[in-house]
Length: 134
Image (cartoon, rainbow, N blue to C red; front, side, top):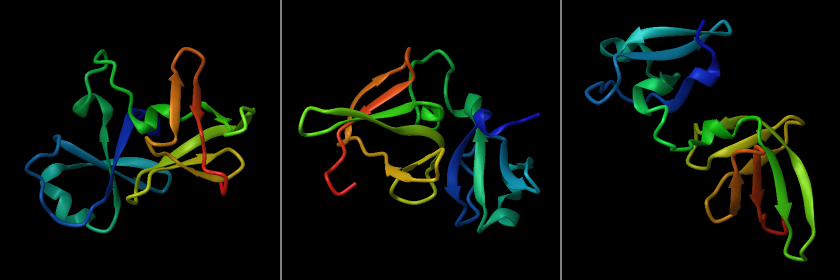
């Protein structure tokens, strides 16, 4: 069975153009990911689309995607030198221009390269320096 970990979000499908898509696009229906042939994308306009990670990313290429950060703990290295745990990433929302980490307690933290200090893949820790207002 295909799970969200197997997929990458391609965002909201806005137009029926399938030229550069992998063979299948998935949409979530009744809690399950349902595959559609790329040629059927006209039926999916207005829905969030997903593609298989393996269709767009070589498993061994070392490229880390936003979705790979699910399960990571966010540690904020504040401007005052104090480090504190912010929470654990439950999911990543890439459906808007601002990618958000949704924590287990439903708080949302923007994932932006300017905020990221380090990613420790072995320890599953994302070190950030968040603006004071967050």
